[in-house]
Image (tube, rainbow, N blue to C red; front, side):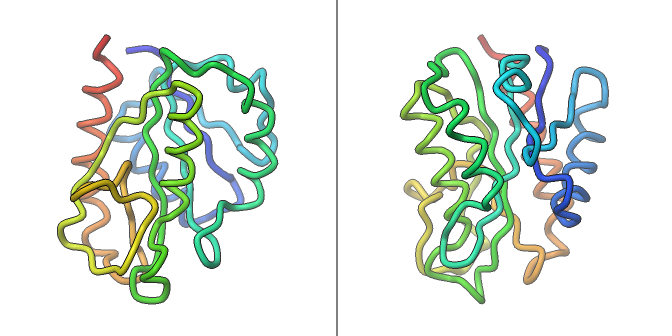
Length: 170
């Protein structure tokens, strides 16, 4: 498997904990964590396989650090690159835009030719709307640590297995 870049904010303690679980399942070899708060285009160029942690802020927005990083790659052709997206949301507190950040990032990646992998079922979630939803799937892994913490570990484990397979496919 090609080296995997895991891009997330090192300041986000909940995300850091979930990334740690993912890396354990991936195996630490060939995985590099990148602090998106400080990431540059040069950091991005090192990888063909990515895991992006994209929590949803406020009423369906990307966190500021993603807004600051994405312009550095918006002119790139992402063809041949694979992106697995995950993020936290709160389906009870923000049911009308649950994990929208994942959907916003998927749109950004796909518009530039990148392939989004690791789609997951919407079964077991209760929400009104999400930009991350396509049919009965999310375009990544939706985590709701606020309301469904007990399901997080199992969801991560299953998701990482599907992501590993997708990253290994030509």
